[in-house]
Image 1 (spheres, rainbow over the protein chains, first blue to last red):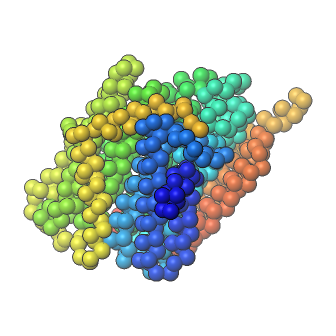
Image 2 (image 1 turned 120 degrees about the vertical axis):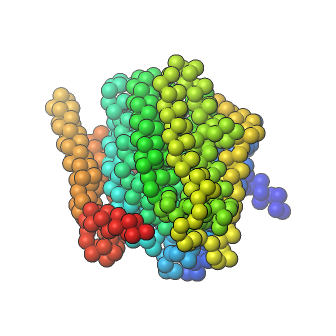
Length: 484
Length: 104
């Protein structure tokens, strides 16, 4: 009996990966008790994660399973399935960890926060599995607006400033994307993603502008420079729950959608080369600006946000290569970004630290949080045997193979900057005496943050035995053009 | 036919100008209400561009729904921001947050 229901769920996996979080969001919003609403949210996210991971493993191992029901409007590709699985896992861990700081949110608003986190996951998953460019843009907007709502629901008033900036930036991005959709539709004759690569384009300039505008709308949400003006204000003063979900879900989700979109647009012969060049330039700018701002940051969540900008640059560089090796490198780096985001944001929430000066000697009071922050810092440095090193190495290999030597230079710059700001964190944690009162810890529910910290440490250490991840990323990249 | 194509280009150019004007207001204004107005104007320009280029009705409707959601959310945030800082200007909020960080 249970087996029959499991088979039914597996048959409808693509639909469930999108609708499960949306249904969970509706349920969580209706429940008045914050803790119960949070439990429903965790269950819904975990269900989505199991479905998405199972689908990705089956498809990547042996192609799309026979009998899989793929509805009209859904298109399964390697990047979408890999990244939806990654995103769903991150969302589960982040929403679980948010339970540790649920008390910081107003009781009346807490169920809505849980619902908004699930809505964000549903939006980004929808953008990763749709077959239509317009639906991708609309679903990404849903994920983005839900993230803004989650940030604004924080009890910290500083979060409102960040929410306004996110809304302004995202709103302009949405307007540009809508204009771009019109131009793409007119130039390519279709908005179906699978048709874009082979479509006959009559007006290549209009097609290039349209594709560029749609990409700009998505890349802006990922925090790539020079469109990242919102990120410091948004992350710098976000409440604990919002910080975890914004870092692990929204930043990862936006980059995932960008990778998928690039995979369809760059192979289009009329516009591919120009788009590739523009993305590569943006990637380099993002690496440099993000790294420099991270070096100068004094607020830990803001520092972590600027590292996201730098890593987004590396991911854009990888995807801009347009080769299977480049996309595989982008997928590995997205996994690394998700792990380091969980590590740094989770560690900041667990240790109750905003200002970097307050990290002094925290390792004695919060060893697990300190270990997570250290793991994140090492990964950002690109220290050997970490996931961060693996992702950057793959990028260097792919870019040298394409004679993009300057991209390898950008990666080295990112790593050297990481040594500076990551090393500063480790030095304060382990080699200084405490100078401020410790504000982390306390409360039984703090234990639910442990999975986020442990998973981020283990994921960073995945660089020790990466064959599963590398094979999955290679298979997913090879599947890019194959779908239902 | 040539007149139609010319008229279409003029309308599209107008939509692009509206988007740029809205974007500039949204990005450079320090007043939250003007930022939101800029976002609304930019979205309006985007919807006009979609209509001029012959997008299907469902895309224009969905875009309109997104614009509406942005305005509702923006309005709620603007009210809370004013309650929290006593001002609708992001520069005042930045100043207050910088002082709070220095005090820490």
